Image 1 (cartoon, one colour):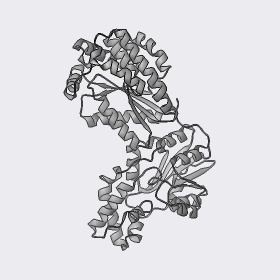
Image 2: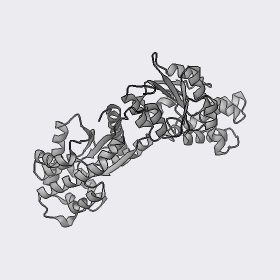
Image 3: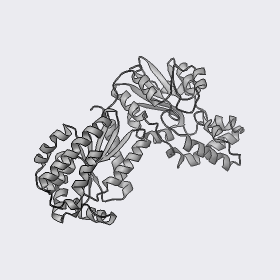
Image 4: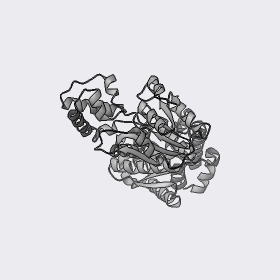
Length: 427
């Protein structure tokens, strides 16, 4: 790669933090009976130290500027830090840098307590070797000193990536390249004037520049499994929204279905008018749907580095047709071999809840389909098959207790997703 050590700024470089910062600035100004500036003026608060911004932009004397910082943090510490998102493509870039052996750090004038919270919440912490930030009591941020703290002891060539002049100046003061992030909150004139060695128009051009032909990290494939009514679809929707806020391209798909041909097969499988379908026919239809889905949707998404979330995959066939229909797991696996061609999820999340409780949930939500009209003997056999699959594949299948509050289940789901994103560095 072009650099073996890459230091990033946080606001405007890794995260799009404007909403939380500007709303918190407005909150502080209102509390201190100061007029609210326009949005363009508010954006000037992003990047430089807050104390200096309140003094220079809002014209506050030192005592008021220090008080304004405290009032700002009243709001930012509770809600403002979450009014944030990672620029799309940043998380895959960090994964790719780590995959290729780079040292990655963050140097920011934001207090460490908030910086670490943001990196943890948005799933970036596993890719960061060091965080150099200020203490909450500090009113000034010395960017050259922060960059110096962020650098490793030994490196061949390093750069500082940021969106403001202070980031470029911090780089030059330490004898390393400054790389401008034009997609952030600075201007081309500002970055060029501060001596940027390269200016990236967007995250894609930044990735191309930093990786310099080195391979990008592959995508991650996660399936969501369990008895009908276990809550997997709700959790997958929440996971997709969260991963998108973390900067990933997220492909949410389902089985049977996921693409036009597979959706047409889905209609046949689930139609209550298909009563009398043989177990073998059902299993083969699922496999046919899966073959098209894998070829048309899943593999291409993984090749371009996306996070693919799938509501059911091969484990469902092994549980429903292998266990529920009593065809046996091995036969179902054999039937699906040409469909998946060796592709299995990097991680499968099995939401464990009793089949009776799951079915009560499901029937309370909407009219059941053909599969959901099956007798208790069938649903019990499906659940038992899932339990056996989880027991036999502990490295791939994570068991999550689905009989809890949605928020508790979501917390466990995120924990597993973070683990797989941090650990899955090879295809």
